[in-house]
Image 1 (tube, rainbow, N blue to C red):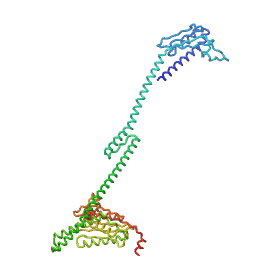
Image 2: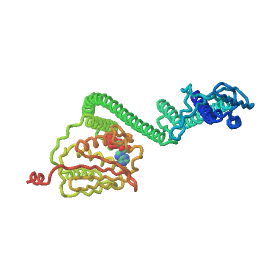
Image 3: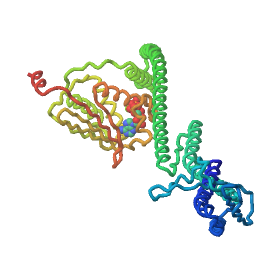
Image 4: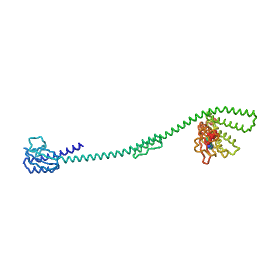
Length: 442
Ligand SMILES: Nc1ncnc2c1ncn2[C@@H]1O[C@H](COP(=O)(O)OP(=O)(O)OP(=O)(O)O)[C@@H](O)[C@H]1O
Ligand SMILES: [Mg+2]
């Protein structure tokens, strides 16, 4: 503000100074020849200029030649200049007239009185305008800052709020996109981070659940094995005691109570056997085996079992062998469990279809039944040990089959058929080369 003031004032005094110099220069002739009219004309001309309140012209002896004034508001200041006699050089008038250093050549003096009120008002006005402009600029800057900060800060605050909600357990919440490309990018990155956190959380929870389940299974398994082991021996004693009683008391073979007791002992023994087989699986004894021959034997067993009933076993087993490294005994017991389930699902009637497809090194067994199928929510559970929907089932049949097939590098898939009933598909692979087979057969 001061700089502006100083600048305006200095330009104003320069202007008055220059005009006074100009007056002094023009007054030289009038003073020399004492021409009042000329000097008055010069003085009046000067008075015609803005802010000039009076003009005094004196000769070299200090005698006042002209005094012209006019009435304008003050405050006033004066400026004076000496009038020098000019030197003619080569017909040119030297401009040293306007220097103040030549005391001897002074022929007069001009004095100009001027008012500073106009320029002060101007400076004041400029000051006010400057203040107004500065104020408006500050307001505009504040407004722009508010708009920019709002568009940037609001999404950041909302991100902070969302982060808080996530930390309180709301994992489904996502950040809204802002209006600027930066905030859209920020919200996108934030949401991606939340997605990956959610995914990580899900994986950890699943892993934890699996771990907890496995731990429980291990505990249950250990406990059950102990019980099974402890029950197996007394069961043997009960069975032989019954035999002795039967002989000593001469009880007839068809005695209902005795038959019932014997059947239950057999069932309990089977249960313990299959449990121990699952819980302490025998190591597969792999040898080059024809899977089709295994299935032929298994299926023939079922055909004999059901030949007199209403259940038909329809099988299509290729005659050509399919060799794979397999444990004959374990594999046939596993496949028996699957076919047995199909027969049980058919409830002693209808058709069970058993088909085998061999393509290069891939072997697939399909077992289709006409039962009620497997409810969707149970499909995932049927391979879990102890999962059963049967009153007298152990829930170990499929768990055992799955364990065996996996140990052979294969897999079992169960699904419901559109026409009703269930379909079990066992897939196995062979890593035996054709020339090896030939060699082994020769
Ligand atoms: N072919 C099928 N059709 C419908 N449900 C089936 C079939 N096979 C298996 N399941 C279902 O899967 C469950 C588990 O079968 P799994 O063979 O493991 O045990 P289980 O048959 O109940 O008992 P166990 O085999 O000891 O007699 C069965 O209880 C049944 O609910
Ligand atoms: Mg079963």
